[in-house]
Each structure stands twice: as structure tokens, then as C-alpha cells.
Length: 417
Ligand SMILES: Cc1ncc(COP(=O)(O)O)c(C=O)c1O
Image 1: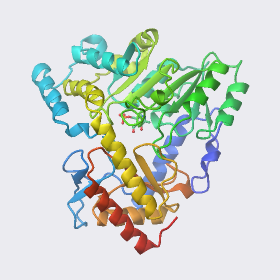
Image 2: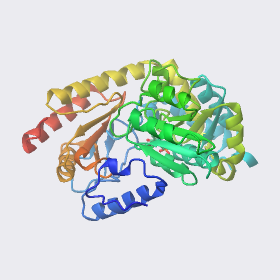
Image 3: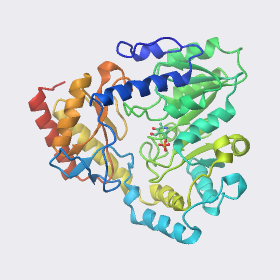
Image 4: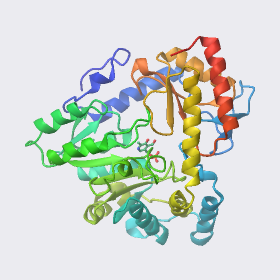
């Protein structure tokens, strides 16, 4: 693999590296993070004592606060604390016991697994789905089963690590994030060289909260005869009139070959899914190794069914989420902060300097606000940022506390646009 100097490189250095070992990136990144955390420059793994919610209890011995407004959860609609979701989990444990007892192929496929598969397929107006124990394996295991030496995976370089892992046994080309010309170049020049070409993108991207131009990407994949996979982990339950994500925005339910996602964000639990044609789903049920050789969802996961229903039954949560997104975004911008190109519940504030970013996240913690510190190489060096995830269940009082904290940070650091 090309030798990349992480301190100096920009994302461009990772573009379209022919034959790039997708794991090389993850390995280098792992080493880099370990190094930085040794120097105390990486705030990560704060101990949460109170569960998932807009306000949580953290165990930070050197901090005067115990309760923090949390901006780190992907529980966008707040369903992890919804009484009906909790009740469904408890009822399923009462009915089935605590564990599934086996992998799906050999006795561990229950009625509730089937119900979730049917529901999530129907949610995306399709016929079939397969569930996995995590969103990570929904991508990694399926792509490993589908893509081999004679195929080509064409990745937006900002896709999730699980996609890179899924492409370990195939050829990979990456294009600069959302760069349609770069994508077209790859599609044009690779036309006759591979059995299958699969373009893999996210719906909503996790660092900028921006959206994929799905309509234009699908025009290209159709034109050049490639397949399209969309992982909309961060768009589901958030984007689109009824929360079906970027696919709903463009009404492209039928045109996307494979939809993947996670139950660990909007759907308030853990697990992953892949929605596709019945033939493809059947193939994966017999070929995706993690599905065959590993137990999937446990009975408590039956609550996912309720969470899927609630997206339609209680649209109030999506309305509250968007009210909160607008409230926080407008408030931050009126303080002179740049929230970038987000169109989702992920709100980044670009700081542009790693040390200052670490300092600001520390100051926010001092003010009782827990937000994520995102640094190079997760994003390019000049794009170091504080990333905040908004929930439907944040109150305006909590968001005001966030804005007040930012006002204080700005005064102290002279941070302005
Ligand atoms: C875009 C994307 N895909 C997949 C995953 C993996 O999901 P899970 O954490 O449920 O394994 C994530 C998790 O953050 C994600 O952001």
C-alpha cells in the first residue's frame, strides 16, 4: 500500500488508490489514535452511568459536574427511553428468555426475527430483508459474501469502516466524497474489467451530516451498468417526509439494489439489516458467514419492531427532532459558528486545529456539555471539529445550555467564523 504520512496527508491522498488494502487505512488510523490517546489528546470512552438520553450522568472524577447534556447519541428519535419500546423488550424476554441460543440457520431464527425482517423490508417498500447482530456486520459480512476477486467495489471514501472491511476480498477504488466526476471516471474506465461493479455510498454522512446526491449517483450507476448499495444508518428516521432517509427524498426505493442500515440509532437497540431482492437475501442467508455461524438478535431485540412502528405511529418525534435541529443550528450560527453543510441531525462545528478542538471539547465538558471531538485522520487536518448529534427529546432548555456554553467558549478562545 502507498506510504501515507498521516500528519501531512489530506483525504485526496486516499483517492482512488488502485489495489488499496482497505484495512490499511483502519490500521493506520488505529495506531494514530492510540498514539494520541497516550498523550491525552483524544477524549474518548467517557464512562456513562445512566444510559442513553438527552441528559446523562458521566463518571469524570476531575469534573465538577455529574450530569451533562449529551450530544453524542445516535438515538435520534429518543426511542431507547420510549415506554412502548422498553415494554416490548421486557415482554419478549418474558416470552422467549434472555438469549436466542443458536445462530439463525440452526435453531436461532425466531418469530420475532422474522417479524423484524418483514417489517424493515416493508418500511423500505420492498419484499425481503435479512437481519444481522450489528449494523457493522450487515455491511461487512454481506459485502464479503457478494464481492470477490473478479469484482470491483467503488466507494465514496467517506463510507463507514464496515464497508471497507466488507471489501477485503475484492478490488476497491475510492472516489472523493460526493465527487460525481470522479465516480464517473472510475465507472467509465473500469467497464470491461470486472464481473460485477458495485458503488457503495452512505445516505447521510456521519462527519458532516451531509447527504449523498442519490438521484445523480443512480443515473450514473444505471448508465454504466453498476449496482448501487446505500447505507443510510444516519438518515433513517431523520431524513425524508416519513423518515425513510435519502431514498425517500428521491423516491428511489426500487432503484437502489441494496439498502443497509442499523438498529442501533433511530431503531433504539442494536443490530443491522440489509434490504434487497428475495433472491439476494436468500443468497446471503446461506453465504454471509456471520449470519450462518453467529447468533443474531437476542429476544430483547423484539423491541425493534415497536421502534419501527413508532416512526409512523408517532411522527411527533421526527417533528420535534427537526425543531431541535433548526433551533441548535440557528443558535450556533447566530453566535458566528460555522455548521457546514449538514442537512441532518449531525451538527459539526469546524474548529480546524486539533489542539484547539481538544481544548474546546474539554471546555464544553467543564460547562456540562458532552460533545464528540472529531480529529484528523477521521477528518482531514483542517477539518477538526466538534460534532453534536441532536435528539428529538432534547428540551430547548438543554439546547440553551449548549448555546450558553458555546458563547462562553467563544469569549475565552476568540473563536469566530
Ligand atoms: C454509516 C454507518 N454504517 C454502519 C454503522 C455500524 O452500525 P452499528 O454500530 O450498529 O454496528 C455505523 C455506526 O456508527 C455507521 O455510522
